[in-house]
Every structure is written in structure tokens, then in C-alpha cells.
Image (cartoon, rainbow, N blue to C red):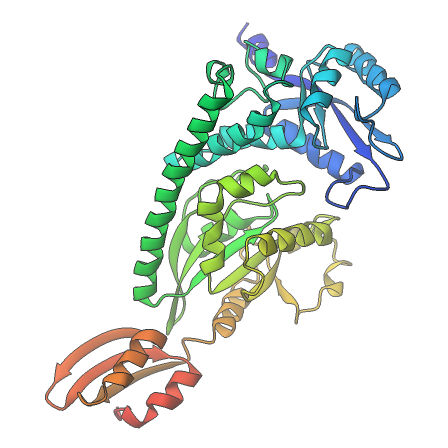
Length: 423
């Protein structure tokens, strides 16, 4: 009896995609993005009952995929016992309403599906605020078009989040709620700004781990720092960022932070709502771009991540390409990855991590010279320089000046060499 109840919780869906010559690479659908959509549905707790890809010169204004294809999708859903239609492309509110009428089933697009997954994954108060804001921004222009999706009393994929009673409220109420959420998230941003200033005072460089969803970012953080965060083999497993200290050499310590994974066709509502979290990237000293090199489309995934990094204003930040899951990769692929372009590792087994840490230290250009300095009291500018550019370990005020033990980079070392104390 219990087993039958568990089975009923798995919602069967027909997956539909549209490929058009006029679509950009980010908008278009192909076999790879359909496979990714299947993984998203499974992550949301559903099951792909069937998949179909339509090719047209242009989208149909009314049904998006054309009247004939809409009928075919309905028949396919009936034959497979599906309860939901999920599109890989973004639909307009009117197209969603018409398709629900044509198929007799709730219809969800890729953006709505990703928002549903985020609603499941959010754990912290901040994460829940960000997801709720993204959902309301997605829902507001669709209030007149979300038919069956809004009215499903039994719940299911696409119905998590704000709740049916709130969705039935008028637009003014939702706009007020959006304004309130933005205010609360602005407070979160201010708190993060204070935290960043405090981190800056410690003189520890910030290294942010970025990458496509399920590339192995959390596994890497766990392997390097013992953070103990969940690292499952599923999409969007980590929403809330985690930061840990890591000593990468005798003279260098860093702050290492993971971030939410990126994906093709990431809803712009999410990028906007998660700004308080994602803008941490723009303050990083170095980015570790983790790439699942075992995936056949790893180059396309890497391009998607680089595009989002650019949208966030972090394009100029130095980064290291980290080719992860090398242990699962076809050996014939690895030789084509130039060692000069990045580091090959396996976050799961720990292989290659020493080389990664060495690359991080070299990229930061710090941690080269532990020094003991005696700076005369008349040389206040030198002390200011050390506080700005060095990692100060100890300060003591003595008769002849300020005794400083610090770690400095090559450039700073040359400017303070005159104050070195012989051991």
C-alpha cells in the first residue's frame, strides 16, 4: 500500500522542444538540451514519459509548435498516461493557455520548471526570499494565462512556492510583495557588503568556485576544506553559498566559496533575484571555473558559464579552468586539453588537487615572501602600504618603531626590503 502511494508522487510528463533557424544558440532546442530537460524533470521529482522535438521555420504565434504538433502531443500524453506537458523553450502566457486547452493538461516551460526546483532546494531564509521573488516576477505577467497550472489542488511540479491562495490575489498585492522582497534582499546585500569589508580587513583573498550545475563544485569544496555540504549527483543541489578558509601553502591562506550552478536558458528572473548571492563573484580575487570534462558538451557548458559571468560583471576577474571528473573521462579526450589552459583533476578522488592549489597560489601572486620588518614610526606610509597589500601576521610596537611579521608579494617585497630584519 505504501509503495503505491510513493509511486503516485512521481508525475509523468511529456517533454516538448522547438528548434528554429532563427533561434539563438541559447534559445534553441536540440537532443542535448532535451536530455538536460529530462534531468531537470527528474530533479523536480517527475518522470519523462515521452520526448518529442519539433522543427519549424518559426514559432507558431498561437500554439508555439503548430496545431498539428499540439494534437500529436495530446495523443502522446494520453497514450503514455502523462499528467503534465513540459516545454524546453520559454512560452508566452497566451501560448501556455492555448496549449493547456489543446492538450487538456497543465503546461510548464523550462523557466517555470527551474523555478520549481529552486523552490525545493532553498533552505536558508535568504535562499527562500530569492526564490519567492523570482517566482512572483515570473508569475506576474502570466496571471491571465496560467490556467490549469494555477488551479491544480493536488500540487505537483510547477505548483511549489508562493501557494495557490497568493497566486489568486490581484496584481497590486503581488507587486507590493515584490517590492517588499526587494527591500528585504537589499538588506541582505548590505549585510553581505559589511561581511566583505570584514573579510577585506583579514587580507585573505577570496576564491569563488563557479561552473555549470552538477560540474562538481560542492565536491571540490568538500575535498579541499572538509566543508561537509551535500554533494549529490543531481542538478542544482546547492543554492546557498558556503565559504571556508583554506591554507594552500605555508605562507598563503584563502577564503574558498562555492556558488549556485549555472545552466542554459537560466531564467533572467533568477539571475536578478539571486543578485545578492551571485554578486559575490564580482568581489572575488580569483574564479575557479569547474568544468565536467566527462560530459560530451563540456565546451558548450563552459560557454554558458562564461556568458553568465559576463552578465554579472565579473568578466575581468582572473580565473583558472578546472577540468573536473578526469577519472570518468575518455582518455582520448584529455590530451586535447592543453595544460597551459587549466588543471585536470578529480574532485571525487582528490587527483590533481595539489597542482590546482599550486596554480591558485601562482595566480594570486601572493604568499611568496614571509618577512620580519622594523618600520620606523616616521614611516607611516609604509605601514599603510602593508595594511593594504600584505597579509599581516603579527604587529608589535617597540622602541625603534613597529615590528611587523607579514607575508608579501613580489611587488610589495621590493618596496619594503629596506626595512627587513636579519634572522
